[in-house]
Amino acid sequence: KHYSLFAVSSESLLETYKEELSRYEMSKGTIKFPLDEPVPVDLIRKIVRHRVEENRERETVKRTAKK
Image (cartoon, rainbow, N blue to C red):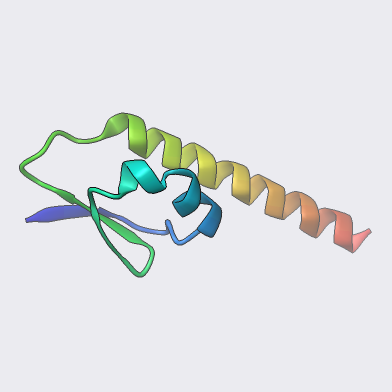
């Protein structure tokens, strides 16, 4: 009935895309996209870019803390 995108529990991501995500069912860091609708490629691309940036920032903080 749906396919899911996992690892989207970031509060900043959810806040940033709150309006675009509001039409999808969500639970425990998962967005459920209905199979009978077109794949929201642009939204998925935005989510992935957001998460990549968060991961980069987290790595920068870790490296800085080790020095």
